Length: 386
Image 1 (cartoon, rainbow, N blue to C red):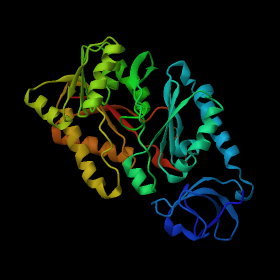
Image 2: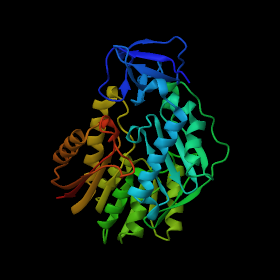
Image 3: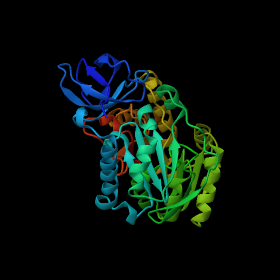
């Protein structure tokens, strides 16, 4: 199949080409189409997903020769490589049946993530091009998971920016998964992201190892990951999970029940909770702060950094003398260096002294492409508070 052509005026530093980098495009190209990419000298450069209405006008996913390119064979190879990495290298099925199978640019499939929950696979689309190839992507996965049930997800922001619309699923099944011996219920067609935060799996296990005998508070807990780990695996004295979303808070209670542990699930805004606990002089031995994505665009970065500082300042106030403090950011626009500066500033303004002993990121099933460092979005800073 001969692909319509795009000619670059300049080569991008990474896999993304913005509108200003495109010199010309064939008139028959439509948003979401596969495009044969050529450099400024007319030489083959690769194949990409074209969408002139997106901020990223061209996502170049391979440097293969576009004149001999076969998309079905390419998808089968890329998905197969991603599956093999999780199964044979990371050996994730030995410890969990819930993990990220495809991580966007990190697995060479820009604009797509895929998470597996037991027999269910959730495809989350960040680009129109990947959305239009959904049937071909499922076909590639069925080579390895012939009986999988597929779900499609995309945020309303992505749908508006990229120019497509997902129809909501009529059924919303709950799937029970097991992660390091801890049980969770996941709704693949509902909730945030793909229904669960697989990226924090290794951090949850590490935090649990630090929880023994401590009072634990899990702030912005979603369905209770850190708190339930601390109660089930860590031997925590007690655990409190604070979450604003009522459905997630209710799911946290169900997750505690299926693990046969006691967790205090509090449905309230985290800022209000922090101020109330500070007024009550309540202290905890392990404080975990894992807020939603605070910075989504460059325009709101300065405001978002201030919010992170305020969040961390208030959370530190709940830390007892010698407590462990774990603070996270999932904002890709904020680097680890910037986040570290925010945490240090929060400690200074709260009168606390931090002993930082570890910095971590997402689990190993979230690889990062060397030419796309923005994929290293999750940051976690581990410290003792004095």
